[in-house]
Image (cartoon, rainbow, N blue to C red; front, side, top):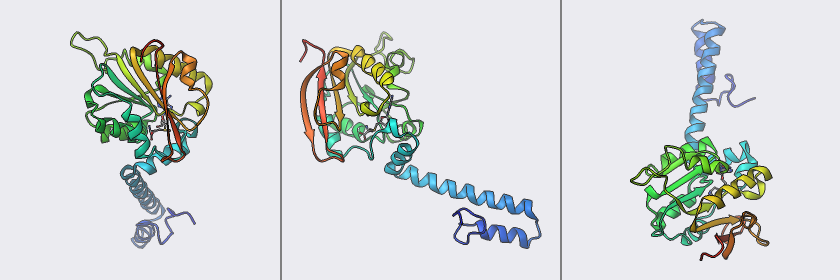
Length: 247
Ligand SMILES: C[S@@+](CC[C@H](N)C(=O)[O-])C[C@H]1O[C@@H](n2cnc3c(N)ncnc32)[C@H](O)[C@@H]1O
């Protein structure tokens, strides 16, 4: 018997409401309305639970879009802190996080000292983007596709300097699951990221592939450093990259 069945005695309000409707001699139409009300109430309870628990929101998005979420759980605080440790909060330009998820790395970037006004987070899931906006009210959260970075950086919402020009990107922090993103989309992400990173800028990417070159090298960036973080599920590798001739 489904949990939200009107005749399920464990369904909150459902059986009681339906019985009351029948007892009042209201007929089937009112009983159906009462059952629907109980299903709506159940939905509200589930949505509230999801809002209160970022991990259940992450799991819900994983089930809905396994290819783009690409991980069984959010990054560990240790991986997030190690990613943030490669960011210089005093370096010029914006810090752009690709694939914010539930905000573990966003929180680590803020804890590292990146000013919220200098941080832009791009997240393609509407539910996760809404969660990030609620969690980090001073951070610019863009609901969009990292493959469209060039046009996002021209949009009126993008942070601008005093003369109205879009601020350049000094650092890209990517939590994108590049290996599970379709190759054509991945190619556009890599090209856009490499093209928009400022000349002396730095790009960070974590991956669960512990060996081999970074996919960003195919877009012309060069590896500057690499670090393994075992305290994550699964263990991860951080690649630090930049433009040739810098760093
Ligand atoms: C592996 S999760 C990482 C989340 C978070 N940064 C963390 O470390 O816990 C990948 C995130 O990237 C987002 N994502 C995937 N493809 C994207 C795209 N093309 N543009 C923007 N976000 C994307 C997913 O929705 C998901 O939130």
